[in-house]
Length: 568
Image (cartoon, rainbow, N blue to C red; front, side, top):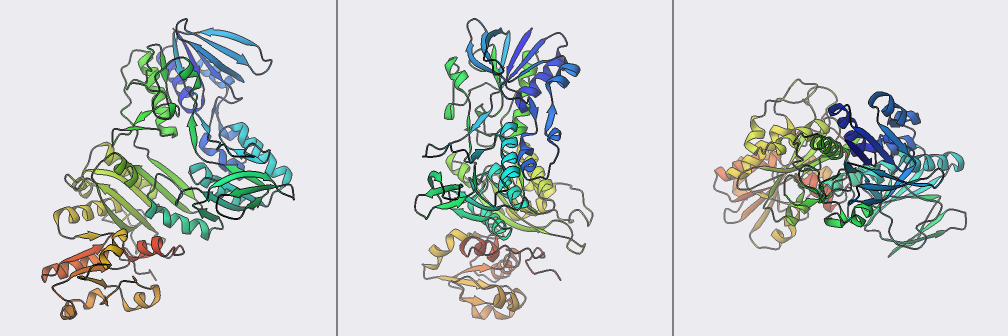
């Protein structure tokens, strides 16, 4: 059997190695148009910023290592130009001498990846405007920085690569302005969770500007780049990193007549087989099924690409492996902060027509009496009827990656909030609390579902305040109330510990909307009020979330107890 693989990196290289482990006699050829076949794509920004200093550390495999260990023929600097499914041949051009030849195959695996999206605006192809997708791009940017020692950069786009580039340029002593066309960075997060990231990025020196549309680029008088904006004054920088997303590279598949899906991505079945029985496809160019919603999706992440490469190899060798979909689990380091998500967010749930509710919890990374605890904001989406977990987002510091992985596993297993309550997770004071943040999310969801507490959200406040029967009750301490401000609609301030003695100040004929810093003390207040016959609602996420969104508050790094009170 002869297997030809177009493209290396995650999907193609994984498929090749798996094929060899399954079939010692197969002829395996990888065609890679760049000079590097298997490299740490996710590590590229960290080489540019100097965190990773050794170029060789980025290389996972080389043509020589593939040859010596796996007897795989890797041909770099060669590009597939045409696929002929009828004759099972591929036309290939060598970049070294521009010669062309034809290679046959019994099975073909497409792993072309995705290209950096380049908006069609004037001047976008200027010599000081860079994209980051390949190792060659990385070296080009790093060499520009080393040779010219620029002082100002503009990063266009606040996705994973854009944010990582912004951080690494700051580390390298370069002033960074980050432009984001929409109202938030990190599309996998919801706006309310992204707001906490916004203030933290600004605290760390990034000039973040949202709702900014770039209309073009032109040379500036000092030899740099002038960035033209739709409704704002132009910016000037020494160079630009363009990180406006990626698009599947599927022209070979399209010209070969393969079936395509959304945004011309390649359609495959669960075995990664395309509409041609002899051609498989894996990686960023493939249309996948969202595991939670069941809808078509494009998810450009290394994890799914590696799984797909393995699955394609299995099926070529007669093992009926299947790809059951991707839930888009992701994590990113932002200076000292970590942001992570898995499953559906509000945008994707609404687009899929899936009913959901949400809770916010504010948990310490480990026992608060053990030194060094930090806080994490957790947002969990769930099905109101069944309690099934649909998605989660976490922003914090220590322990974020651990909790998002637990929640990702819970989603994959189809668990409900009741299941989160029952999870038996490892506990010792330096690592967690007896009630882990994942358990806490389950407890809060079940409190909501069982009717122990009713919620209202930050986006409901103005509409509620417009009514005539609303009382907004703040139950924080006197010190917090004086120091941190209050909701503009606040009617009464009664600390939770004094609430029972002041119930006569409340009108039982009106609805009581209660808030504290994080939502924990206001939940306790709601239980007290409910027991005395009041109709009350708890502000989900608390005053801190409201201020992060509506007040554009500066990031507060102070460690706090789960109730929100600052630790001594």
